[in-house]
Image 1 (cartoon, one colour):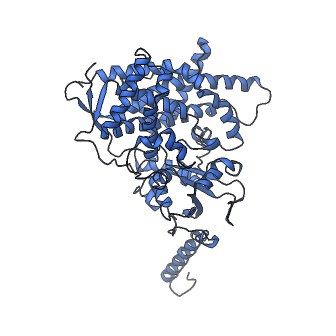
Image 2: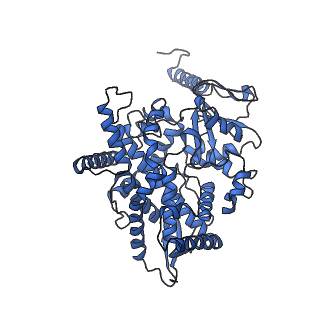
Image 3: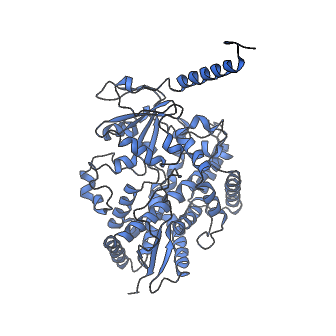
Amino acid sequence: MTVITNYWTLDSVILFTLLIVLVYFYVTRKFGYWKNRGVIEIKPTAFIGNLGDVLTAKRSAAQWVQDIYNYEAGSPYVGFYLFDQPCLLIRDPELVKNVLVRDFDYFQDRYARANPEDKLASASLFLIKNPTWKMVRSKLTPIYTPAKLKKMFELMMEVGDDLDTHMESFDLSGQGENLEMKDLCVRFTTDMIGTTTYGLKVNSLNNPESEFRKCGQDIFRLTLYQNVQLLSIFFMPKFAKPLGFKLFSENSRNFLRQTTWDALAERERSGIIRDDLVGLLGELRKAYYDNLDKGDFEFDGDNLVAQLAIFFTAGFESSSTTLSLTLYELALNPEFQTRARDEIIKGLEQTNGEITYDLVMNLPYLDMAVSETLRKYPPLGFLDRVANADYKVPNCDLIIEKGTPVFISMTGLHYDPQYFPNPDKYDPERFTEKNKKLRKSCVYFPFGEGPHICIGMRIGLLQVKLGLVKLLIKYEFAPCKDTIIPLRISPKCLTTTSEEGIFLNVKKLATK
């Protein structure tokens, strides 16, 4: 039966065209939102907004957010769109400080959100929302105090000794060997997180087929589908549930659950008390059931597993990236490498050759080198928040409406020449005490800033520095024929990851 004309085929074409037009007007109805408010905006594309380069893996998420930062130099903010959702990227350091610190009450939550059916992601400290986040954060904060890290250091040194053993398995005398350092560093930090989080000897350094290593590989597998799943958490959270996206695969979920419950059961059976995350969560679980007032967050089941899962996932990947990229930059800059090594040797002379917690954490030049690595290669190159109430931007008429996602580009600020001249150059001298005091606040924050600052910052830095101390006192690192210069960042990964691996020539130093 015809509707418009006497021909049903022509009616079908007309109706289909009308449907397309209606859908087009619906998905573009919010475009111009920022322009109408006097804010510079990037012209969006129907159906995808400004997200095209990320969806097609032409640019990594951090590079894409940095592109938005660089779109209009001098502007305090830039408007853009995630599909049809108006978002604001803020560039001005004072406004960054307001959002992250001063006016935190307006921006308490991340915009990122996982599929609520994916409990290991949605119940984790990284993604839960207020007021639950504030309560869980306060319970977990004591785990990485300097005093407890000192107690963990002995366990970390055992992993450091395993690293020594592993390095001895190569023939590094004479001309040395060309090694892929990212994989080596991943296995080292996986073992570190295994012992400090779960209280387990993971031994992936000497057994690359260990279950923990395979779980880590599964989580960060560089496939287009896995990338889209991770991107959905930060840029497409409303699609995560209907599309069934989950941060962890079924195999990873089963492994992390089994490992958590085995570790907790062993602690209860043996009565061993250790100042690690399993120990703390065991105490919180017991306190939860001993307390008649249960509260809104159950410290049991997947809520417990989620905390261990996110500490494991974020801990080994971000630390291995920083460790391997510091070695990469020191290999390209041998004068910096020599200075860092000399500082370590001088420090060891004061401790009779013993590597101690205080030694590792009190090497100023090594700290400067690690800080510069984190400037050039922050593990996650952007921050996200969402306004939980209308917020009037100070000193202007702009109101950030409730529900508006707000993004901050770490890499944009870290590479802005007005804060870091010649930003592509690796220069540890940027982080002398004098230069740090001269620099404007909230232009450097590789671990975030404000109440949401990374809870694992201290242990992350400690294991990176321990790895560097262990390696630099015995080995020299230099570029080789397989070294990619300049480094290329993979567009398929949410976090900062080299596209081809990090190959360096490693040569054993002559013993003095």
